Image 1 (tube, rainbow, N blue to C red):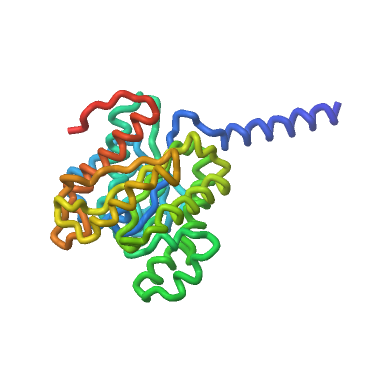
Image 2 (image 1 turned 120 degrees about the vertical axis):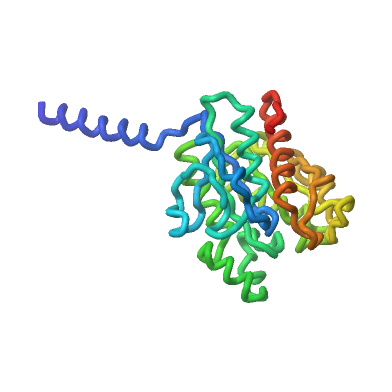
Length: 283
């Protein structure tokens, strides 16, 4: 009788544990990475801080100033990258997603980005040699991710997989790799590593890559968009998000707050289309 009771007790613990860490199929998670335009270079405004509680961010670093701790979910009030960053495409990506998705679906983002970095920073096998030759300001940002942004992205993604389902990846990077004809292959290496490390099916995980500031806005790195346009030839399940018409802040590199809002909406519209949802305009 005692043995039977013990078995029931153990089974109960196992079942309660499985419930505590069960994946919610209605919690859609998206990984975001890149350099300064994904990090967020424009100061957000009061209207940007009005956020539906169905839109969440998993904090990737400890932010005492925001009362946020690494590895926990919070309502996605900006900043969504590190503790003092600005508005990013991820903000209005998430806002647009929850506006269009059924009310029982929650959206979560994880944003790991480092201003000024090359795509080489996210190469899990060779990032150290890249960081070692980088300027101190970049090294200091990398330190916030314990020296390895790719590993931090994977670490947070694995935590998130206990709660929901990874549905896609958002990338905004390329300015520091302008005219690098090997960029698409380097992005594919990062993408393939994410698929392996997170046990994801590439046929189900779309990669959305945003253009740098467009030529129509005087983009200093607009020539990179010709290379970004070829990414789908390297990664079949990848899509390019146009930056045409998205205003820049005057440095020819970074978008204005209005530019980030529009770019974020475009990321969302493409993702919604991929996932098979009808798109309504977010005012």
